[in-house]
Image 1 (cartoon, rainbow, N blue to C red):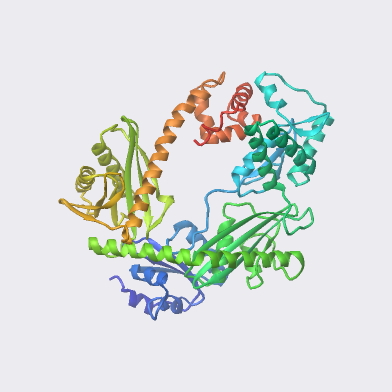
Image 2: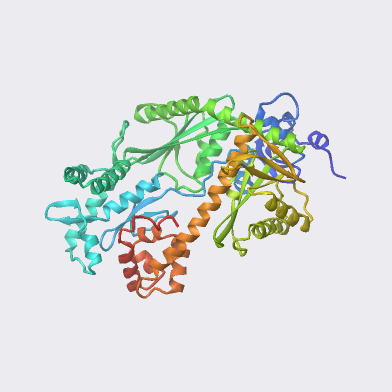
Length: 588
């Protein structure tokens, strides 16, 4: 016989461990750790709590526990469980994307490449990481336009012109060595001569009324400044470390990360979240999650109230406290930044969350549904039946859950009704097969006929999931909801539900249209690769599988490309991609 919540709480052990809260679908919605499981878990179901805790507890129908021997084991287990299950009431700081580096080859003609290598290769120098990937790409582009010359190490276009003409420039070993050392100096921030040359060229272009060229030089200056500009706090040129600090207010946690490379503060990152955990625990969890996808620094600095032994054992990196000097000064700057960010954003965030909750509450009342958590919204797109696609976006508690967004190529062309039937069938037949939870509500961005198509498909699958459709006015603006059986509810723009529905409609439209455009661009882009001598369909597929986009192919070195296709083909490809296509194909 299954125990009730009260019976399970009564039988909890007074040991350290982790607890996993579950909702009516059996989905894990929160993971926590405790020194004493009985005291911690029972506290959720007694007394008053803040809004977020109350909402989480209202959805709990069951929980599991995992007992550990030590608090350290509990922390490690909690982080791994959060990583595995990504519960919606935990702070999820993990980002699947890693920050790019700039890497410079140690052998051959120097070339700077944007890289996301998690393991650094011994035949390259690495600089970074750089959270601003666009600036890193611009910097690589700038440095790859550079050649040593009698006038010094200055920016010019000779290298690109040489590629266009299929000529190969020759350099002595000493010239190549000096060339590489100059690139290293610039990437380490010793760039005054180089920067001055760029400024001169920009000003000369501007005086000649060649504003497009001047803007091009300005863009490169901005990238150079991003990578190498001097900051308020300076350290020894060989110092490289990361630093984190935080501030708190009424259950909200603001964390700031400061990244020092070669003695210069190159980047600041911020995160603000509401947390159910102790602030110190949430901070440690953030830092541990952050380095899931980022290379570990040589040294890491954290506030004095954080257990450095715990973090050191978790991350296998030296963790320090700053007590005096410039690092202490930087730590105080980090805390002040976190406080200012929290002060600036708190009212906005709180008001946004309040408005979302009001909108969801009104929707629950209108539809007579208790606890609407997950909403899935569908929309279709095509041009005269060509490149027909559909998209499903997912909102959890009124917030986009982009990890669960899905895109679909359709076989139904211009038939909107058939398209809606196809995408709804594919989506929920897949969830049935995988045993995954269904949404609490489906929203169709379409009219009555698409609503009926979705309902008919769900009936065929024998699924009882509530469905509504968004009703539009003559200007294609959301004005209400359609519930079926000719029952329509119009909404006022002052209604808290109105901006929530508009957000649903705009987000699914953005997502489906961007996919539709991407397919059309991919179709046009293929013709570019077809111009590369010696590159067939198999080679094109291999390149896209490894590099993902034309931009990444262009950023890759000839040797990187030659790992996929023959060297001669790689050289031909690099030559074609060196042409300025105005980036119009690079967003694939």
